[in-house]
Image (cartoon, rainbow, N blue to C red; front, side, top):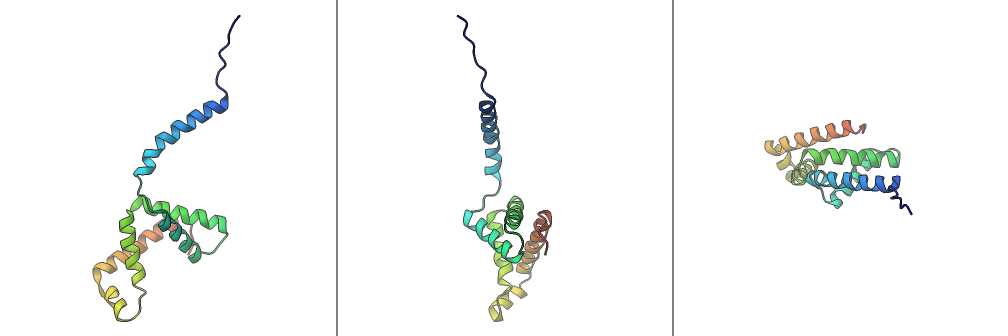
Length: 126
């Protein structure tokens, strides 16, 4: 009696390949700057609020912008830059400290340039 060794099905082969690829990609994804989930959600929500459009399209475009942002700067730099940019809108004497501080204004300009770059790359129109 002959026994035949059945080759693995195509699905099992694909599953094995997918597992290998996922394992190979995991270290690269972990090496990329990791933003906390809360900050990712807040960034995408703010982006969608500032750029209305079809929901599914804007979710993807805004998530793309965040991914590109995270690839360029660390989370700590993001917090520092975005805080400085948001603080320029504070009115009165407290806000004038930020608006008159050249080092903080350099950070604000850097953040705005970075935002413009990632939005352009992800086709987010003003």
